[in-house]
Length: 459
Ligand SMILES: Cc1cc2nc3c(=O)[nH]c(=O)nc-3n(C[C@H](O)[C@H](O)[C@H](O)COP(=O)(O)OP(=O)(O)OC[C@H]3O[C@@H](n4cnc5c(N)ncnc54)[C@H](O)[C@@H]3O)c2cc1C
Image (cartoon, protein in one colour):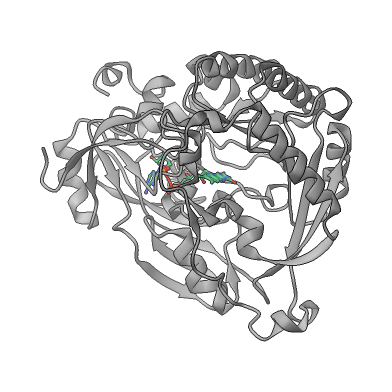
């Protein structure tokens, strides 16, 4: 065992798969060359909020959480430079009261800057603002030879593009610079619109294109004429003079502390067709009846799930998988309908089903988004779940789409290779990046054959 290393079971947020890994914390950049020498392969890990096996390497999983310093902030431009282990939650706590907000945020605050870059995450504003990576001006990357390289769109540009969405496979991101955007208040004006079926949902998305933020919750047990019935939520940050008086006195406040928690693993039978069906019916009716427009705090608009700590335990001991795919726009109506029909026919209703609109793809070689619609579904890991996921993969493939690596735990290599046409350019950059292909590896890269064959045997 290396000094300071712990052997433990690790998993992603879905708790599937769970692998025996050697975990070590990186505390100083200077320790990296030694770590690289001591271990055959390694993968960086942020806060473990990817769902599947992306941040797992039994040889060495390198936690970046101790690299958590904010290094510089320019109050003229909003440019923040920080270490890769800084949590989005800390950026929000520091900068919202000063009137700044990250350009793109995912559905949880508990991710690191390194994790947001490596997965090139998207938010509810992809159709307007692209991915988080689109706002990264530069990053420092420790490569396999122990060198630290400053990468940007003009310096080591290929390595930069491969690192956005590169799932940690190009090196260890040590720090990054990106621009926050100014906000006048911490409140979002939120509108909720009900769609009776999938066609109405697509029409509402198109009609909401000028709204900065939008996403729809889908009742994925609704069948037949109701297939795809959903609630579309759209919003934008409010200006100070639009706030009602009760909120105006402290317009940049943080959310109140305290949250609910799931203390033990719930029996997975709790999530069945009847319980999900009941929840969906009530949720849809409540959404339809709600006031169309109301001010809400950014925290409940962007991060509703963060209010329940350890909600991943609701799916039981065996864990769960999130299936997220994107389909090109022209294929989305038939493809998303086919996916939902397959899920309802399998009776495997998903508790969480979210539809979002993506704008054009960005420059990350392995970034997930492409112009079209993305659907995310959660499934408890049970007998039959893998078979269902294979069928969903088939449908996604037939419609020219791909799955999101940050959520994936089960996809076959050929599906990922076909879905990510720039993966061979990615392989080339990695091969040229001082041996990244045989150094940075994860259970995901092994499963998807994104790792040199002789290394696959060692993970
Ligand atoms: C409730 C919830 C909601 C979510 N909503 C969204 C969403 O709306 N949009 C979206 O895009 N994603 C979403 N995600 C997924 C999440 O944003 C990504 O998986 C993100 O990468 C997690 O960050 P992390 O710091 O936990 O990274 P980890 O999960 O620890 O790692 C993720 C990947 O990043 C790599 N990595 C991490 N740090 C570094 C580093 N310093 N250097 C190199 N590589 C590194 C890892 O190797 C791994 O491949 C959601 C996840 C949850 C749990």
